[in-house]
Length: 304
Image 1 (cartoon, rainbow, N blue to C red):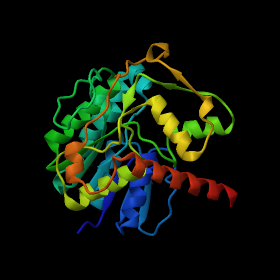
Image 2: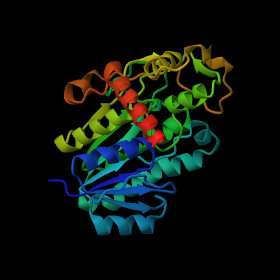
Image 3: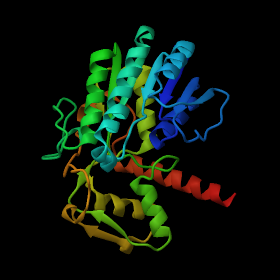
Image 4: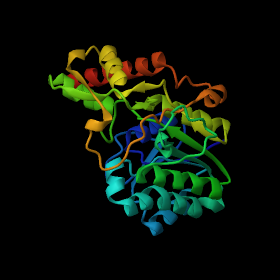
């Protein structure tokens, strides 16, 4: 029986949705965030603001709570920022993960690490859970180093790779939220027709993570949706939410001025994960139905 789940990065979109799912299932949750508030209230939720680089504070929290499960979602997700400051990328995505593992090792928690499709080079797409990563930017490299730390230091673990996480909630602006904001103001939005991912719906990601924990599934998992270009994804979002399709402008990767190289096709194959996890995290029907429900809840909340 799990008595305490510690979730890092709880103020991010995936952290928020995972925290909500854990509370919904009746677990005691310790939600850790760095600066932003965790906008959830529950008698089963304790919230702490702490920088994961503060070793003394992290040791103190772990010693006091002795969590049976750690869901490590926190990280530095700004791809261009990681390229401009690789030292910071390694500090936040690799070394903080390594320290969290080392400091909690004597409690032997079940450790879940949220990783990314960007651990792959994007030359062919359709990467399986067993494929060897080969990142092309510092963000992907730092997250892959985090994966290696988990594999080396954790007793029981699951590495969950996601791709282009989207949905409604707090945290950094994801593409779906960006689309809604721009299109609601009748502003045009550009979307790539030659970059492909397998976008992950955040609420379904949270459900999958909780299933992994409850069943103690230990492996690498690809919790992703169906393959599509950024343009195809944008069209699917506007069709689902009844927004203006003619404001979506197709562009190509060579028109972008990025600091970091992006994989052209970082789509993940999730066939093995689908066989192991019961949650339908992968079908467009499930993912965009959830997105529509979240959008409706958001609109209803704005009216109150």
